[in-house]
Length: 284
View 1: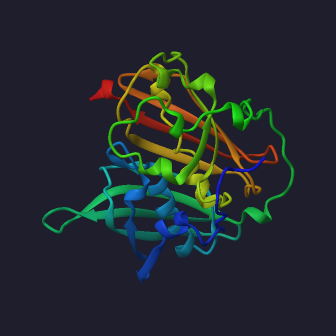
View 2: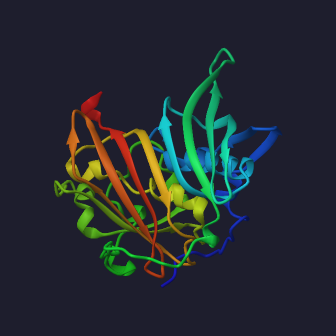
């Protein structure tokens, strides 16, 4: 099963790689340019932002692969220049732990912290093959029976730039919201890839867990659902080919909901898991 793309970008040479690039200014300090190409409605996507910070940490730490990364989103990020400041907390034989913050500038030129991250990095290729799990890959209809953003009956208000950079084919059972008849179940399932055909790697998994429409839509809630906190566990290096993503919300209370995501690769392996806390319009 292949993605519908006219070009095949490669890891390290794709729009995602260019738009998450960071430049070392001095030890522990990196410059980045947040691209408007990864915005949705009125915000820069949180998974994209995490991938930018994740790239900086992968360069700052002696280990290259994110194992677990937790981010608190403090203020809304905007397209444009950003500075990432990293710090090595601990270095071990198999894991290194670091922290990082992403800053942008306000109108007076002062730094404003947007996101703060704590992460542990290691070598995914050095992990043992032993797998013991009760997790089951999500059941999603074949790609030709699923629907992408281009099939939506009405456009989403605001920026939808990110949808041009993603290959999404959503399970019709989770698309009631698009037809004005949300199911009331906090579920979202989709095939996933990058539009230019670039295969997934550990860094792009940080984007994938936050790239689907929010489960709040199927709960009958419209509008921006900003992330408060997002934790991602990368379990193994994904095989080439499309990913399958399933996201579930079991509890919305006080204007906040959780989203639990699982990402499965083309070899039916659970390659990433995440949980995020998000704020719904009810909480404003």
